[in-house]
Image (cartoon, rainbow, N blue to C red; front, side):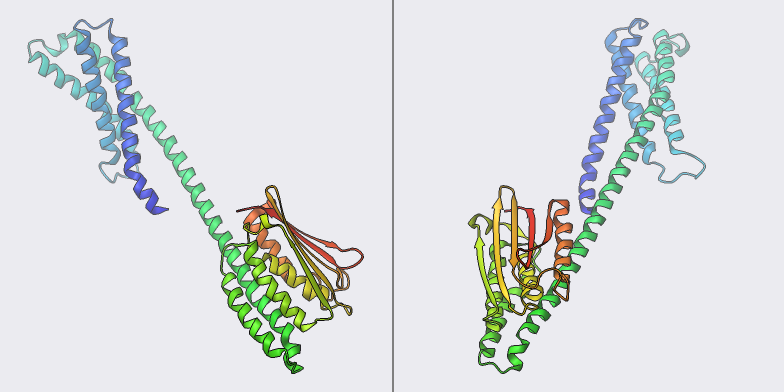
Length: 351
């Protein structure tokens, strides 16, 4: 943010200077038109002098805006600027008179000089004061915008930190649950334990790097879900059955990492595991116009029979969806019929 501000500073100074010069020229021409009827010399000389006066006032205003760098606390800079503008127009007026007339006409007898001096004394300080008021208002607007941008940046950083914390919680939760699911095979010295462990190692090699990604795709999620379900089916071949129905148009859509994995793991851990009969898991993913709907249905223990409740995985996933999508994403938990649980994630379809 500071680099952008530094790069934009010269452009801002040029733009401010251009605006001031344009205002000075406009006022000079306006004053010239007002004094035209009282002016005895040629109109061109009037406009030339008013333009020179306007530019000299602009230079004095800009000079004392930055110089001296420090002033006493009791002395306001805007007072110095107003006085400087008033003095500059007076000095410039008399210098122009001396250069043009070369002393042929005394200053107190020059009608045009008197008219121009009176107009300059009357208009210059008030014009400078109006410019200062406008400058203060612009500065206040810039400060408000800068504070708003800084607050927005801090809020974004806080959200990123919160999201990274939630994603970091997913990793140990998932790994411990997966290891606990194959523990029974290892302790029972099953002949399939070795193949299950090989599959688990291959799965973890693909799954662990995905946990650090800011976003995944439905296709990438399914690459993790399939071997996970194969591992779980090896563990309980007579108690777990599953099926997938995936819309091809949804494969390339982006989603938070482990979204589908969390829903499937929740169905296994809180639906199939507590049920004596086991059950079936159906995964349905489809794209509906600008929405992506992921639905995982199990015929396991159900909402009220699971001893562990819906699980921390769904709670964490709901928070992650809220941080990424806000109110445009929903996670719904419903009772299945005749038994089991239906968990549905409805989120924006992001290619």
